[in-house]
Length: 199
Image (tube, rainbow, N blue to C red; front, side):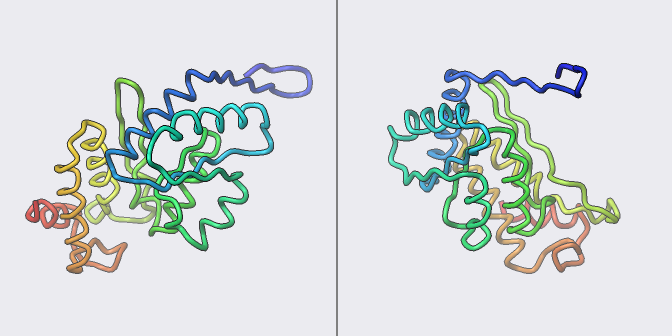
């Protein structure tokens, strides 16, 4: 950020190498998760960087066995609410990442059910989604952290273990074993124990 007479100028440098590294990591995670329908989200607001992003998307994902689509963020947002399962992987620059993640989280039950994942060449970090307002900490829903842990396992190439965690989580939900925010009565610890028992 540079302050000038009229306000603040924001500058961001992007390169083909950085976009390609990001695409390669996204493709690797999509392959490990067996996700084939991939959408590339860009914007007409930034035509040059968006064109570079789409070029890297085609170069990297075009080498695999994927169903590819390219959408502007506005068009994608309008249609994802009608059919959230149309794509199972979405790649976009950080500018649209929070918006896309928030929209998808809202469609699936709320930010607290979906983790925020930060993936680098040598590191992986998962954090719980948005804080649950007015929730007693004893009853906080740990779903986003469990899903984040599963994503970390996938990132380490431990697909079988990751699927076991997700299967146990789905089993708890299916059997009505839930925290109060999603229609149950269990505490955080009780819910976590129910998931662990299924492993």
